[in-house]
Image (cartoon, rainbow, N blue to C red; front, side, top):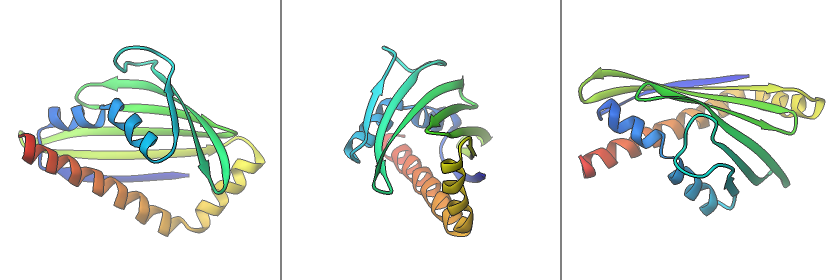
Length: 154
C-alpha cells in the first residue's frame, strides 16, 4: 500500500533539508507523544543509523526498528522500518524550484509479511481516502511549520 504527496515550501532547499534531517527533533517529538525512542548508534545521524521505537497502537504495544538507508544532501533521504511483519519505506525527495522555493515529495510504501499485518493493511485500504487525507494533512502541516521557521530564522 502506497501513500504519496507533495508540497511546495517557500524556503531554500538547504534550509528544508536541514529541517527534514533533524533527527534529534524527531526523537524529542516522539518522546513527548509517549513513544520510547533509542538510537543504537552514537553521534550525528548518517546512513546506517538505527532507532528502536516503542509505542502503543490500537491498544497494543508495538516495536519498530527504523534505519536511515539513504542520506543525500540536499536531495532527500530514505528510512526503512520493520515492525512485526510490516515493512515500511519512507522516501523524502527535495527539488529546488527556485532559490527560495522547494518541492517536497513524500512517498510511504507499506508491505505486509504476515497475515496479521495483511489484516492491518486491509483495514487501512478500506479507509484509504480518509487515511490519504490524514497523511496529506500531516505533510502539509509539517511543510507550513518549515515555512514558519524559515520566516522566523530566515
